[in-house]
Length: 430
Image 1: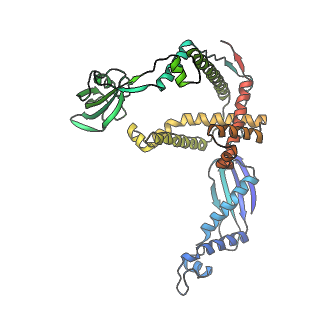
Image 2 (image 1 turned 90 degrees about the vertical axis):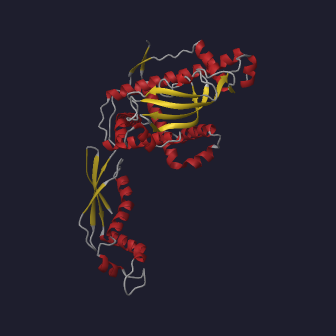
């Protein structure tokens, strides 16, 4: 095979692959050997008919399509590598006329990763971010720890109050009919959480265990289910159980039970140290994002549509995975929201464009500065990941495989570029 570069315009490369007559004949013969068992020809046992007989009956080009596909799949990656093209989409292929015993040419056009030169990424001005830790922050952290060690206590001697967790059955009725999705049994609901339609939870305050209550509400005008938007509905409810959260007393004994410390003061000092570390990391990340945003705004880049479309598909896939982890899928979500897939994708396009452009800018800076990632840096990252998952580093390396390790290397290279932008930024005090 001979590869010939033709042109590259607007991030689209054009080149040809010339297949010799011998290569074409060999590929056709290979397909014949693989497929001859499919053909039943009179006078021959199945799979024993000569190629010439099969071609005479079914046409000379019976094996051409698969032969061409095989030749393309075998030679295209080699051609892309030889021409040093960084392709980002499936190629469009045209063929010269195919004749038995003659060479032919594949002419290929394919979108390539844009070659960009990033400007103004050194010395960007950003504002200093300070996140102080207050006494209230520490108190809230201690309360959160106490909440994680609270217990739910069943209420027998009073009706439901704001903040209680109740277990209810409900049936939703609107316009004299039950509506889809408006029925549940033994549903757990925290009163005051504002997770239900406005006005619903408040009407359960004062209801006792075993009692029934008709809750009348009006759906919001912008409710996702258009048939219910602005409609008045009645939910026939039955309250099965009331529980409240019993918080432990926050004292030295509590501290001994839930931590390695002996006193409340020691625990507070530890929580303050943790919060200060978290705030420092958050402030630094906020400033890094601000620096990247400044570089983003300073550079206009022609983004191929296919890259944005690929990113939208990736975002859709990520969201679908999140939904599945919550017991839902994309189709159900779109139906619930009253949308279709195309409209939802359109909403993602701006964010997808920003993701792609930002990634291209940072990657280009890494190229311009010549950043590389050493084996030692990759091993250190793998060791850190292995520690998080309680695995041996060698075991994790084997599980990930080279492709994922290459992605980790790419991420480390991007991190170097982001750190470089931040380290060279001018940080202004307010």
